[in-house]
Length: 225
Ligand code: ADP
Ligand code: MG
Image (cartoon, helix red, strand yellow):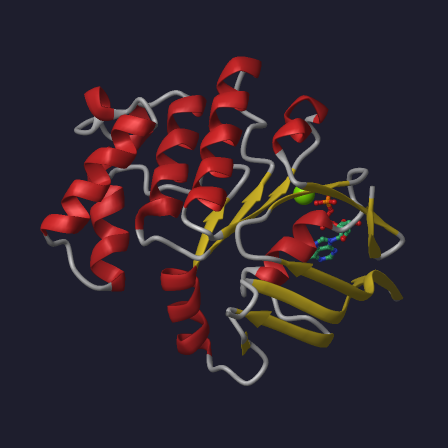
């Protein structure tokens, strides 16, 4: 079976005034099925850039991104959108939910976009909201939730379409320590139990014990820590 994610010699730069700032330099990275990997590194080192490239949200300036054995390089924007919707569950630092939707309707929306809101999708939504402790709030609008509650809905949404690859960018920044550990344990369970994979970008040393491997971004490359 193909690896969920592989980055080959990925390069990315941004213009800093007149200067070209190279953020990622021929970075190589591979995640195996069933693996839960953490990426750490100082602020500004390129973690979010790397994750955005892995999640088909940002195009690299060089190198190749392969998701489930499929190179993203030759895909059109709509093909990339399809990969994001069906193969990748992305959890952002800010939850990026639709504020006026009700909790359960967030999950309905992504299920409909990917296929259908049928009985099995409804059941999955119910199970996810239960696992996130959000069953009681399923009819509440997103804008009326606390930061931690929003993040739990964002995680349920990321899991909804059973993605093979979960990418989480500092998902616990808005949560307290015990809730953080719970959330990370849920991501880990998802990565392991269904033989998928998850990549977690984090500042939080206290959750690293959950991870199979920890990498550090340094000078544009990833090093196993
Ligand atoms: P991290 O997530 O590790 O804190 P980022 O990947 O967000 O780091 O950013 C890495 C570097 O790239 C930073 O110096 C940041 O300012 C710069 N950067 C990120 N996105 C852009 C952009 N769209 N335009 C210009 N510079 C950017
Ligand atoms: Mg970041």
